[in-house]
Length: 299
Image 1 (cartoon, rainbow, N blue to C red):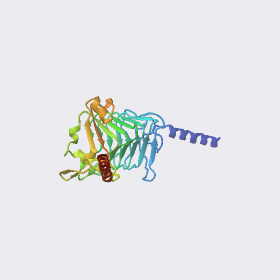
Image 2: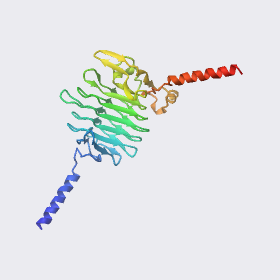
Image 3: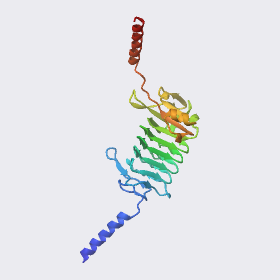
């Protein structure tokens, strides 16, 4: 009888543990009432999280990836499910590193409120956190502000837009461009950042935000900065020409850029190809044209 009682008690404790409304979960499925995912992964074995349903977080608290000293958390969202942060989103809490929100082809993330990547302070770092939006119909939609820094030491954080992935921001877009504390980055490789309104002057020659933008260069096979900022001196690099910033005024302009009418009234920040026609090919083409002209002249 006593043995049976102990078994029932153990079973009851297990059920209470499994059904209790925790704020932090071990790596695994993101539950509907979660407001934070924070486990301790590593570079070789990150703490992997995923959705098994369309997920909407509670409106009471901001959703946070990572925690104090809890790093290498990775949340993957693909075409099967959507994710909505109902009261803002932070990727990379204070003293948290290498957290990744990975939005893959067809995946859709909506942030109601502000989105922040990296959270540092004068005492603690929040670095190497990233949002990656990659592939056809991979979308990050933010109806507030998108901020890639907060205070000191929240540096080297990234939002990457690749292979058709897009981010649409209704509010302000902020990059941290300070020579002392490092930079956080917007990396463009076939993706597009859409900002509401005409924001072209924010990216004018000489603006500091350019020193925190990298574009993919096919020739070097790496991301390259379009500008550099050292102390008080701003200098463009040879890769500035690979950055395009266009305010979409009407349907004709949208079509010419390959965008739908949904983006009329937005500023598109994107990269252009860096692969020119090789010089040898130009020489070959010139020689061929000359040869054809010579043949025609003598026939």
